[in-house]
Image 1: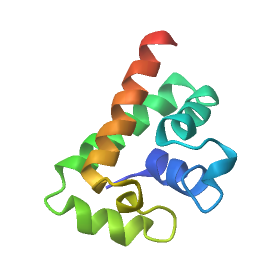
Image 2: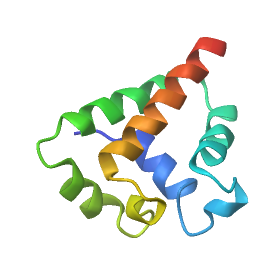
Image 3: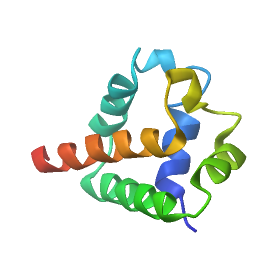
Length: 96
């Protein structure tokens, strides 16, 4: 599974310094979306969809991103987090 766009988002935006981009998931995502091309945003949406199709999405997310981001600290599961960022990315594509 190729997760390049999601890997970049998690490592560069949802890391220990996420607060530099915003205080909420939506604000951090907006900072990301403001600097990315429509193709990159589309790639992120595809990455999220592929990830959500994985039979063990929670375990896989924890394996890959445990050092960057823990959705449970925001009161979310990994699947819920991926759905939120994918929906915001979809909405952003409508305005680009």
